[in-house]
Image 1 (spheres, rainbow, N blue to C red):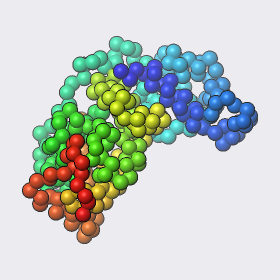
Image 2 (image 1 turned 45 degrees about the horizontal axis):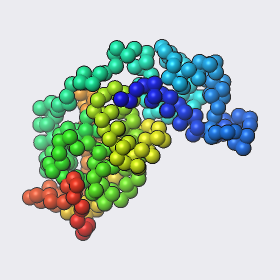
Image 3 (image 1 turned 180 degrees about the vertical axis):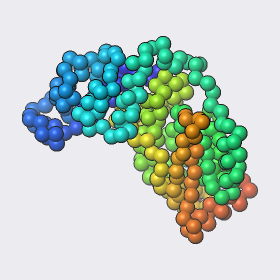
Length: 298
């Protein structure tokens, strides 16, 4: 399990190591330091708390950490908004107590409301769309959404997970020419998910499998990067219709806060728009299936 004590310790150490003391106007150059980044006493000083208290926080031994202390540490470590949210999330179970943490089997299964499936169907032939749930599981999609990259219909239900597909499917690197960027995006999103649900069995299952099976995931996960990516542009080399340059937007579903509707689009009149129409018209997608090597790109 992704215990909060382990997560908060690893996260704070990584963020402390990522800072250059010189940039913060601190004395003692890098050459006089045994390790990279800030010392614990320097973080404590910048946060206005005792060294002993900060040490206990970083070692996962502090209980009932107040919001004001977390904010002070966030400022001292120059955390981004996403990293601040992550720090608060992994500190929450510690403040609530172990009894409130999710135990294996305690988290209900993820289901998509009929109204959302109806919305997916309404965009069937024009807007590729899918629903992503806890731990980056892909829960539902319309026909075009299931064809943009991987053929989701051909993927086993327990493998319909963005992180598992990007890091373990043989087709992933051919589909995503900027694979390293895509991998970093996925890890940042998955870490944000683990912060919201540190004891979720499915998230733990996905993370633990990837730590064992993917050296790239293990490397990126160890960096402790948190950057939830909810919008942007990606390039996909689709084996059936060629290059797609598409914009994606993620919308949190109000009644289902653990789910997001992800849509893809292209500028009107663009080559990608034409290729999406061509993709929608295909009777069957035969490439980019899980476990199958992709065909050449036209």
